[in-house]
Length: 132
Image 1: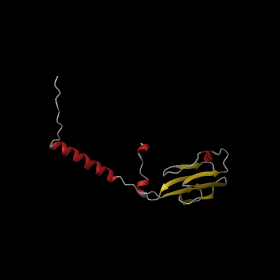
Image 2 (image 1 turned 60 degrees about the vertical axis):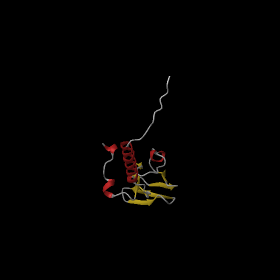
Image 3 (image 1 turned 180 degrees about the vertical axis):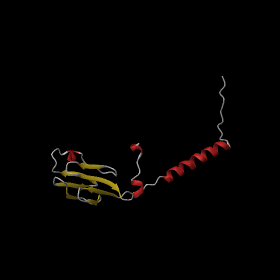
Image 4 (image 1 turned 135 degrees about the vertical axis):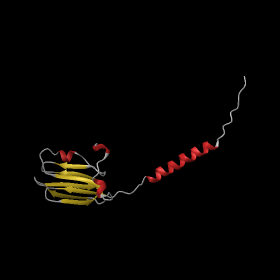
C-alpha cells in the first residue's frame, strides 16, 4: 500500500479568481453607507403637525378631537401615556424607537410617526418591497 503525496499548488487563474473575489467583496461593503440617523417624531393632529427631536427626554400633550393625548419621549423611545379614548389601544401599543414605526390613537385622531430627518423627501414617498 502506497501513500501518494498530493502537492496543492495555486495556478495563475486561481490567483485571479481570489483577487476578483476580494475586490468584489471590498467594493460591496464600501458601498454600504453607515450614516448616523437623526430621528425625529412627527405628531399629526386634526389641527396641526408637531415635530420633536428624539434625542431629548420630554413629556407633552397634544389636542385631538376628544381631548388631550399625553406623549412621552424617554431614552430615544416614544410612547403614548394617556388619551381620552375609551379603549386605550394606543397606550397598549407600547414604545417605538425606529424610523418608520408609528403609534395611533384613532378615536382622538392623533398619529405619532418616527422619521429619519436625513432621509430625502423624494425617497420617503417611494414604496418599499413590502408594499408590493
